[in-house]
Image (cartoon, rainbow, N blue to C red; front, top):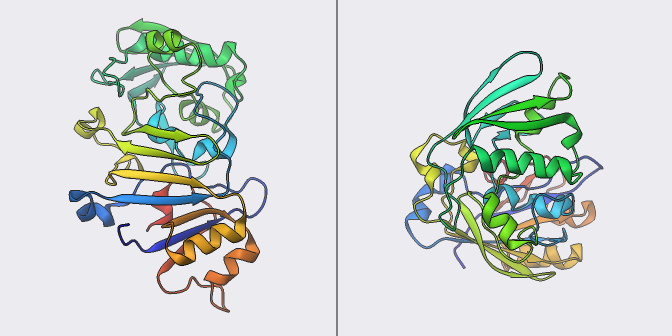
Length: 287
């Protein structure tokens, strides 16, 4: 296993964020020139691979945006939306927003993502009752790379939430699969899932020649780890032992009691470890 500064994350109270995107920071850019593998231990249930569904919860947030990026991502917790798939957004009349996406977006199977796919993803999520889709009315296609999103409210922060919530898929591949991609991943993100055993582990590998490399992406959406392996370790005590022994490089979901073993008396992380409570990505953890 590659030697990393070991990391742990603690889930504190309800509403506390956990790691969502398994990316390394630019501090590890040099490591990426070699085969780099990050092993993550997590006590959060994977809950399958399905997308455009309300199933998944915190466990799904560990990997979904790495595989299925949205039109935008959020800046840390409840921050402004930062463009990812979308190149621009402009308010039209009332609650209608015109969004233009990049014209060179491809998923891991080589499918070209267009406005039709974006509108399909938003409307499918809405029609199938995916949580938080009540904030918008629907989406329509303007041209090959432009859509109009009609919001249901102009409440502060709701547009940002919406842009960063819906996973984008290729319509034809999604409908042909018929299972919400429950057994394989076909996203347009910088990673794809190459191995998955429900309740045990899953492996993400970096997509070669990812389309996003040609654009300026948010730093926490810039991959420089070749492979990330998530291991499900339900018991917090076993998760802590795995981190302590170096079996995993990072732990998500330690209890307060188990976290104490990695802290000094004044609450600072022990040498060789880093710690964070509120996370939106591995970028925050590994700073």
